[in-house]
Image (cartoon, rainbow over the protein chains, first blue to last red):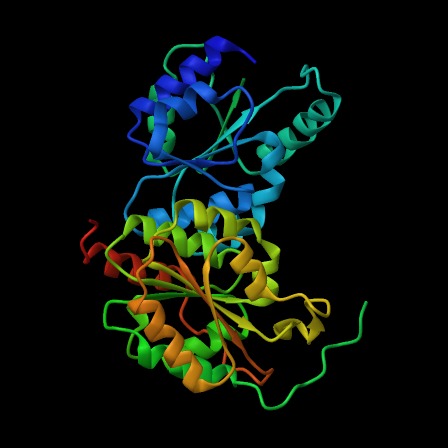
Length: 151
Length: 203
């Protein structure tokens, strides 16, 4: 995991007015969960996180779903037939372990999920470069659902 | 695959159960209903309270987390999730999440006919498996109803019970033909429901 990337992600999400953060715990993001404290809800599966976020958004909250790339496939039915079909917006940030991950199954997951994220039209947040806050704000403004970043 | 679940007699009808639930709810109470026959029947019976109902037409297994999200955003409203037993089985982990974060304003009603009725009646649970026992083991305040009178009594007890967390009612229902499909577009359902929630206090 890239510590600079994680710090950038923490700063980005802390500054963005997200409330709450919803997701399945992902390795390497403890600093993010610590910063959000009670404004962080853990689900047992990514599809559940999507349904939970849909309810929160219907009730006027500003949730953001965060997941590792391995969770993308787990959530697509609720994403399409609930949040998508009913037009309930909240952003989803996918943390991609990358093809260089030391775990060989994550390498395959990252490579294959990248194709899925491409088909979903995911925007890339480059946390190494400056200006990612602007990019995130612009995505939210235009209701871009999927964003992905390397961690 | 096991044999199709056989039609059982002497059980509560789905429509009777829904009518019992609707007559026990107050003016502000909101309902989230599961895909398939449950949403279809609820839609047919709620022409006068559309803005307080969110009729799911897909996303099997999502009723409980969806209702939990609404209940967290609107802690002063009572939210009732109407789920099928097969749909609940798709996301049993949601019970843990509901126990973890849910408050007394979250109520789950499981229409338990032990079959995937909307897809043709395939058996959903093995012999001896009881949804109510699973809910109790999760730590949820759980009741069971097998006749119309028990539905009303259970809902009255749920409203009056002093509890911190969510409550569950398992309604043992028979299979039966559904009402017509939900005819409102999903976007209208969500926009109307969200506007109703926005009109109510958030804390």
